[in-house]
Amino acid sequence: MDLNMKVNHLPALTYRFLKSNNSQIEINDLYIENTKTPEPENIPAAVSVKSDATEADVKAIFEDANNKIKAKKTELPGPNGDTAPLNDGQVVRTGMGVEIDNLMAEMNVPVTVITAAEGTEVKEPVFIRYALKDGDCVLGSQVIHALKGSEITVIMEYDSDTDAKGFIGIQTRLLAEEGAKINLIKVQMLSEGIMHFDDIGGVCEDKASIDSIGMQLGALNTWGGCRVTLLGRKSKFNNHTGYLCRHKQTYDMNYVADQMGEKTESEMIFRGVLLDEAQKIFRGTLDFKSGSAGSVGDEQEDTLLLSPDVVNRTMPMILCQEEDVDGRHGATIGQLGDDTLFYMQSRGIGEEEAKRLMIRARMESIARMIPDEALIIRIQQFIRTIL
Image 1 (tube, rainbow, N blue to C red):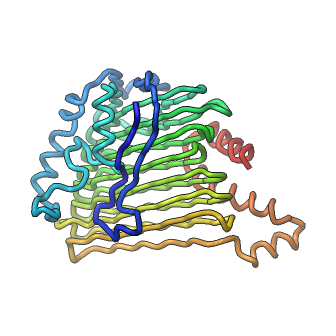
Image 2: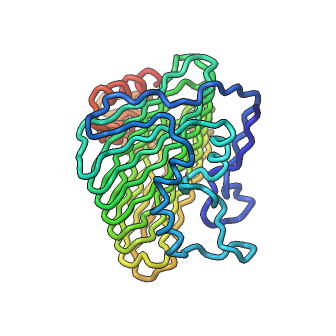
Image 3: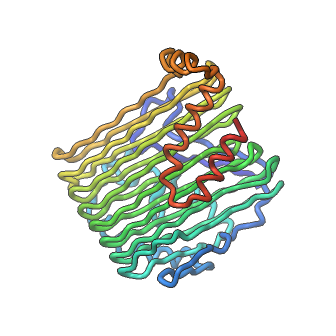
């Protein structure tokens, strides 16, 4: 099959000549034979796993939350006078959009549902590990459901053989019910011969929260999207993403905090490094909907450019239908400063080693948030190997 999909739609359009309103995935001659999520590991007693759920099961899980979203009627009119957003029709609105849903439906991808029992705090993380070999083409879909008052941590790791070529596309959807918390960690350490997309969508009800940590360190072309709907009062979304792109790697991402409830909070932090001829585009949106009075949002990106040939595009955005909100965004984009280089060289550290130290420090500032020491060590080893 050939993939030709428009993904990563900006919630509000900007000038067409900027070529940033969306992105295109074009991959030819794929033969996708594996569409099953690997069996989750380290399953505690308070967590249940259903590995062959259907999209009808997913609709049932999110039905109550979707009814509440529809009742709010917060969408602005579209270009034809209707209220249908660009990626409407999804069970859960995700960062990459409805065409990922269509692909999963076309390929009849089974959904793995991981559920934390009501009122339980699961301290040990659940693991899902994808290990690709040369020629593998994989699709996977998961739903993480934290029932009322529960907490769960899920770590997903994408790895491959050193010189493997192939494709992996993952969709993960999250529902945190009242007072619940989901911690989602994704670490991508694929070879440079692999194409990859990672699509995330989540909903938080009253006083619920979603914390996500992402590390994008490999693959030739990566598309990533995350959209979290803060539906309930005092719900929260925190995200920390680290990315390292080198050679001719590309990373195209779209993150949206959709703040609907009163006194919601969102924070999105991105730290990245671009080397050689790498390219990256970042779309980050704080969307304060009508009814989100008292809400706070902050998005910050810090990108280090270590080659004159890299291409960096950054588009932070704030949309607002509510008066009483506090939204902040900013981007720091630049090269390694002369003062920093001089300081290190005065202590016997050459320019190339100084760059490696700065890269490792930036990536490890995100990696250290991961609650698994063995995985942190694997990340450190991977970074040292590719540098």
